[in-house]
Length: 546
Ligand code: SER
Image (tube, rainbow, N blue to C red):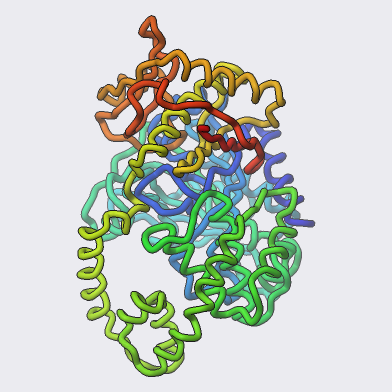
């Protein structure tokens, strides 16, 4: 069974059982407390605390998806047989549509009947503090005829994702791989609680759990591991999602280039801080372990995902590769000489992780505390001397970007007005040159539609409409139906931008921090450059102001 078939069998199985299939969200999440999308539940997070919205948005209380994910916590383990930084997560979710019994029964049916796998054993939560031992799950498994049912502790308590969120006990399904080893295949989470703080704080006992009104279901099954089991392979690299990489070096290159390719395709670029730094680190690590230029690897990965994801790194990986190769050999020589890690990082572009890795290989010690002190001092200096250093987290306020930002609001309104009033924004990215919007829509726009949208926006520009900012309580902004990014988290008081027609009626209202121009006549001529698919059900438009 190919991985493509596993994906579609999974989605069909749940679609037939009254789940709405939701496209993967971007790897770059709206939730500012996490750098990357790490789980299928991330885009579903708001529904666990407001389950009534699920019916409004999906027409059902149950959803299912194949979600692109990035997890970098285990980056040093990549190269063994199971750890990856990029993976796809198959998941079904419910916000009051069904409970534990149904969730477990569905998982059991999919694994044993649809895929014909044998369950080796399952786990359930043994209870701790206010959270009871999960007798219900145990009983359901027993009724289904599973014999090996094991009580487990913290490992089978999930969440919260990010700085707060739903969480609860889980039950996990293990199957045997071809070597006879037990592999965790599926994690079925029961969101019974909401936690106001992170998992770390929860584990430290610094926060309490609040019971959710409605039990939520959140399940996650890694496609790569599942494919290895279904396809009778020893490890994920031997499945059709990889190229049969054997050595640790080859595997690191395959994993990192894949993650980088997906990250860039979703709008990330190599930078010195935050998300962009992780991307840079992945590419540089791949360069270090690769004996040949990364081009071949990029092509190989594109081919594997052909027809499933539109992958395009726009030459970014090779650009970063060339930049880094130039300094890699110089940096290595400096490292050999014993040059200070801080100098290696700031002068030779050697990420500290690389220095640490090299040091470990050579049995050398690195004073990380000293490095951290120096780097913090350095960053403070560059922050005051050039605010641009931390651009990643700051809104870009130059004139061209501001204009494109207002055009972006007009474009979304135009799409809703001309093409379909239900179009929702799914992501955005604005540079000095162009704007980019990702939105939920399941087909290509016709040339006529594109022209009409363009005309609509240009007409609003010519009319010289006022752009007005208002602060209001979040509840009120939601009530008036201001556009918000799907899944984003907002404070109690929000800023909403209105573009008003001459009669004072809003033709566009969006949650937005700004800034914007004060009148649309400042924008000039609006032009759509490109309309394309980013993923199944998500379209992307790039547009400019002339
Ligand atoms: N959120 C859980 C996980 O990522 C189940 O989807 O494992």
